[in-house]
Amino acid sequence: MTFFTRSRRLPSQERTTAEDGLTTDGGPERMPGVDAAAHDVDGLRDEADSAREDPVAGDAERGRGHGVAALAITALACLLVQFALVAPNEVGGLMPGAFVRIPVEGLVGVALLLVLPMRARRVVAALAGVALGLLTILKIVDMGFFAILARPFDPVFDWALLDAGMEFLTDSIGRAGTTGSVVAASVLATAVLILMTVSVLRLTRLVTRHNTAATRAVMVLGAAWVTCALLGTQLVPDVPLASRSASALAYDRAAQVRTDLLDQQAFAAEAAVDAFRDTPGEELLTALRGKDVILTFVESYGRDAVENPEFASQVDAVLDAGTRRLSATGFASRSAFLTSPTAGGASWLAHSTLLSGLWIDNQQRYRALVSSNRLTLTGAFRRASWRTVAVMPGTTGDWPEAAFYGHDRVYGFPNLGYRGPDLGWATVPDQYTLSAFERFEHATPNRAPLMAEIALVSSHAPWALIPPVIDWGEVGDGSVFDATVPTGDPPDAIWTKGPAHVRTEYRRSIEYSLNTLISYVETYGDDDLVLVILGDHQPAPIITGDRASRDVPITIVARDRAVLDRISEWDWQDGLKPGPQAPVWRMDTFRDRFLTAFGPVS
Image 1 (cartoon, helix red, strand yellow):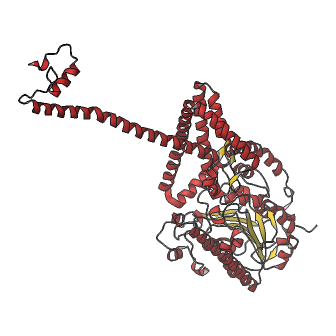
Image 2 (cartoon, rainbow, N blue to C red):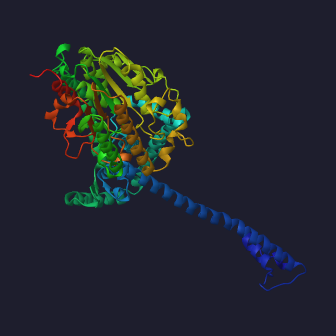
């Protein structure tokens, strides 16, 4: 056959000629079966072409997908770094405009990476990623502290609050919930550190590959930053477009650490001054001889309770009605405000401040105080021959600080004899607390005058289970409250119902605590009773909003007008409710003013 007679033809050429059915002279030649063979060859060729084309198309498709994924990851890395640099450390500042800012720290960081050699660049990038991760964790922790305690996290003193926080969580959501919360927080912190470091390393590689574009971007954004800084440009009120918030936060926290480390010396100098340290007992509290003085801290009873429009109409109505009710039984009252060293929690700081006459606003000061021999207000009463007791229903274990305060007897939760429903952290209703005090101490015949410090905890978060005030003769061992406390949702469920519901329950708890105290005075008050009512601190910002004051109401109630005459120079206002113009003192000034007012007349 002339089909294969041409010599020195390349294999591909031979296949082409054969497949096309060409003769050696280029003309077509039909042979039996050739059409079928040619059809089969065409099919094989199509399959071969498909086999060759599909991998190429698949690679292209995969390439496009990889490019999109890489772009998305890079964008996410940029967002994470931007968040770390410009995000506020308060939840209230989390608004879109707060993130549209030019962080000077980012510009400096990119400029530094551009001039560093490759090996040093990677090390610096990794360290910067860890630093940004830690900064982000600090901001998240700050958000929690601002939301609960109305202040940022203190890196020196606040580690001591972990135990109190764990105890509160356990009482509120149970041990399993607390364990889950701790595990989740640990995982989140680890993830933030890893993701932030990986993000910075990825952006560093991007800057390295596109160093010319990166240099130009730094120059343009740097000029924009300087211009905005000089003009004070803002997209959001009080949020400058030219941001330096990350470096400012780091600097402020470093300065705070230095101040904290020096605070021990400052506190020692303050504690060394005590006008009543050596005052003999016979010269203390002479104007209160024979009186029973009851100092009652109402948990979270802050200035907002009597002035915030969301609470004031109802709470003020209770106070105004209480003033009239007590007046009908011969009692009068005077009220003002004290500025607490804490807000949202850490009640022991307020208690120790009021009783010691020293400003106790952190755990280091508290530990130094309770290990000293400072004369407390309770200790002054004890030195002057009063029987001193403390009723602390929120204390479920040992309380070694009682010896420092000068209490002859402490009634914690285990020895209050309560048999009522479980109320979470607020272990017993306030009415039971006062009823137990009445039975154990106040109603005891032939006793010495009493000085009692009583903590009323029904108004402590989460304000979930608030019983009504019942007849005092029915209180008994507290089991009567089983029928009055609603069932269904667990105590911590209040946090899932929104801020409006939380604020309503807070208000109801304050009304309950105040109504209980008023009813107690009506029922058990006599000519020798002197009652001091005050809040320990404002509630959390979820109740008050941001930037609330730290003021708390304080009231002195007595039937003996000579007692109130002693404080006439204080200019406190009549009644149970302090008005907007009532005097405001720092809480640490109360001890000395009280001891002076009720001491010997000079």
